[in-house]
Length: 471
Image (tube, rainbow, N blue to C red; front, side, top):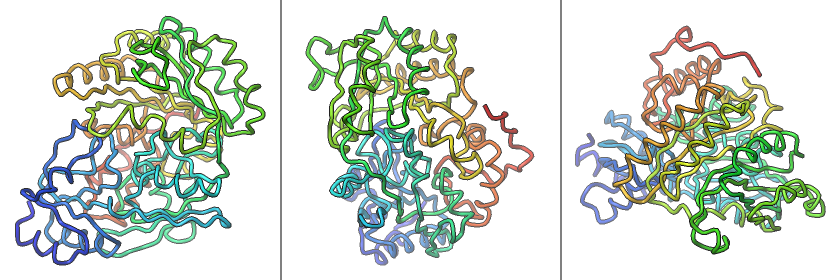
């Protein structure tokens, strides 16, 4: 644990603030998006710039403190905060600089996607990201990044041009295709294992307005709808994205009162192609007779932030995830069974499509391995009440255990909790894991950055399970 003298020394070296237990803002400073996480760091270094990050990492290393890196604080397992250690907090570092002519944007490590969207939308441009505007840029990017634009423009990492990284030895380096390409390879999916990324440079895509929103059907139609969806989305134009979901209709606009509180199945759509083609593209969806057809033209940031108010910070989450190649009828039956047992109104399951542009990148071209998967599946139990933690956790685990046999065998690291073990981390990277170990040993040989889905140095290449054959 960091002692008071070390914390005072750290505070003297930073332009930003250092929060310690007893400080008035300590309680709010240690909170993260997932209200189930309740950790008490010895100090929180709220860095005001790169020099602060260098100083914080230096103090953390010299004092042999456990360190976690916090960007947006959205991580499923709350890995941006640790007990008794030092939180290197980037949340004050939110600078964004757009170059509309070059179609690039430079984003500091503490920014959220909503802030990026506001800056880039003025030029009719966007970075492919997730589905919540409150998500941090850093965490989502380093894990891969799937969302509304994935089929058309690939993962977020497929649009990453470079990164500035503070390493464990205190040096500030740039990683790109031309500079430290091994580190750049590892950053694209390898998480926060290699250093503190203080800035990202992204390629921007031409996205201004989109045609999107939810379509919902009664839960008793979910078997037929999921069977239809699994075929339809993989054959649809790549400008069309749509993630399948089981959900309880929120008792609020824009959902009509007649549907409030009803468990339903649905698809949340995003058409990024010409608006003039939207009626044609959505005709097969209308033909299915949804109870709600909430698809409409809207600015890109409006779709990205559409669910923010329904899932505010502080709710209690428990997650399980898998990559999916196929959804056989046996898997459909399990999905339907657990959809009928949603434990709370906020609990849900999402199937995010990740074919199209994702498939055109080789499985070894970035650390992100599951390029042949067709979906990124996540099951989440969610509720604000701590008394329901056991209920949402049990449902999530049992649901996952029922459908996991039909998975591709690994999961998206951004959707993994901190209690799943090193085997699951290895399964996420498959035959990319030995190369990640090499990069880890080069850039963080003492494993200073280990509060993450950790690339464990004690595991040899021979111990890593061989990858299954490509689909």
